[in-house]
Picture 1 (cartoon, rainbow, N blue to C red):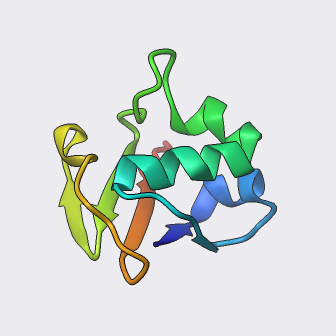
Picture 2 (tube, rainbow, N blue to C red; picture 1 turned 120 degrees about the horizontal axis):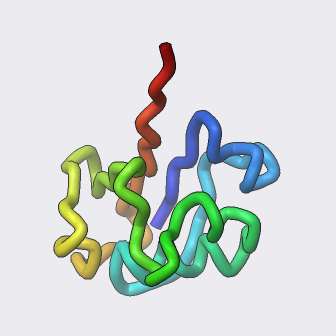
Length: 88
């Protein structure tokens, strides 16, 4: 699968935004991503290892809930990580 990383997360992936990872599920792919880029762990995952609520995960354009991260993903699938940005 291809994981698309954008915005503030790019600095944690050496500014790579289309990253090919292996894994049978979306969750597996995200874990492979954090293994490849260990600095990403602290901003993507919380203390329990779950995706932080500030990030939305989408599979082929469909937003997934936290309970849907175990959906199957193949090499042709695209996983987007979208980070909410706030300011004032």
